[in-house]
Structures are given as C-alpha cells and as structure tokens.
Length: 103
Image (tube, rainbow, N blue to C red; front, top):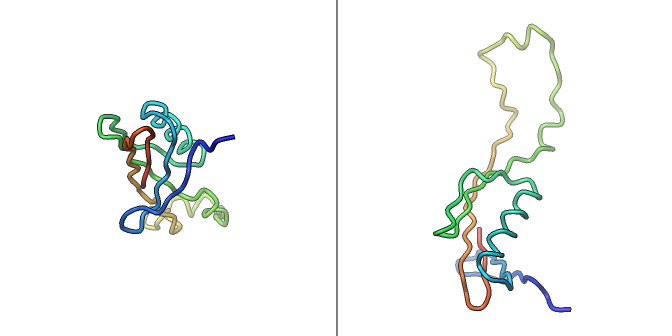
C-alpha cells in the first residue's frame, strides 16, 4: 500500500505536507481536513492556492461559570476569557506530479 501523503521538513523551519495527488484533489482534501479538525475557513483563493483559516480551542473555555442575571448587565466587563483565535494561512502549490501544503 502506497502512502497518500508525507510530512517533510520545509524551508525556514516550516513543515510541509506533500499530498501525492493532483492540485484539484489536494485542494478539496485539505479543505475537508481543515474543517474536520476544527479550523474555520475565513477566506480562500484557489487561483493562488491559499486558505485563510482561524482556530480557537473549544476546550479552553470549559471553566466559564454563570454568575447570574446581574452579571450579564455589567457591560464594562470583558467577555473574553483569554481565548484568542489564532489565524493561519495555508498554501497549496503544485510540485509535479503531486501537490504540497504548508501553513
């Protein structure tokens, strides 16, 4: 059985994922994989091979407690519990005969 993809060391310390398929199929698979692991695709540019994604850890806000009705009226308090969505750009490029992906 042959591998469909491989992780390789990239230029500048980035890791790359080489997908052994044509660009159109790799584009679709990367998009599906991003969705499955919890990334939100904010924008995409297929011509340039780029996904602009955001990731916020859903488990990071598990300690939130409900203080009651009056605490909801305190508009001067921050609702942000320190959870910040990280933004990434995922680039897909063609390298004959396969496509590779880097974030």
